[in-house]
Length: 336
View 1 (cartoon, rainbow, N blue to C red):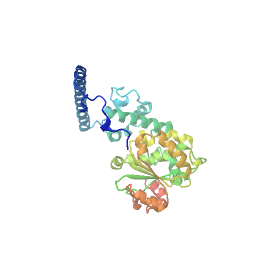
View 2: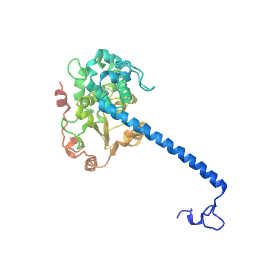
View 3: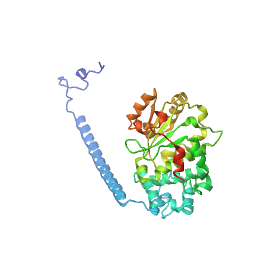
View 4: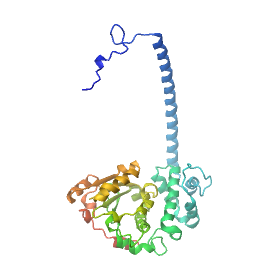
């Protein structure tokens, strides 16, 4: 029982004990002052409400107009279209984007820019920042020579040197075309225990992930639905991670025009459960923390848990107790 009892709370009551404070000149002055404050607060609330309605109307007009032209978004980035500098002060470097305008304008089509606008809910300044980060990230990951090539496996493409590694390492596996969760979202399977940094670099691994994600981005329907990540944590040890991985870890958060809808870690190892996951959550934004789920226990228990997240057995790889056979060799051949 609480120590506070409202029946015995008689502070400030009248001498008659009725529980009502007597009317005094001081109380009248206090009442007038409070009324004035309430009136001012009401007026301020009305002004804010009007400003909010005006903002909503502006947003609706922008969505109806569909600002997807190269010049419109380019003006926010500070490149084409004129009027640079319209974005916030925290605008990332636009040097890589400006070079892309000159060297590969075919990769800056209105449909491509629309992907960034849709990812940022048709907010041009935020979309411009993501677009600038995308090209800066891509230049850092692929280098000057391959950055501005088409993102394909074909001869002359950015991923041409990585074709053998993409099908052999299988750290990131794209489930076959047509296999999605019950919400129609694409699924990427990750197996960190297959890492071997003695044979390749961290950059090469993230190039593979970048390309797998790009195949989803290039399909407007799949891009709008987003992607779900399934990670198998069995056998993962400290040697399977590198400090350099933090350099490229923001690939889904603020680089690609693609939403990571959920991240499921299945059968986490001890190093993941006690060290890596708590550290990653500490530095992750709130949206990423809410979309991250760990599943542990028997294989059947994990399968049942995933089913609650619209991931039934029919859309899980066989390594996680599902029925989908993942063949990255065939997946790569289909794109050559």
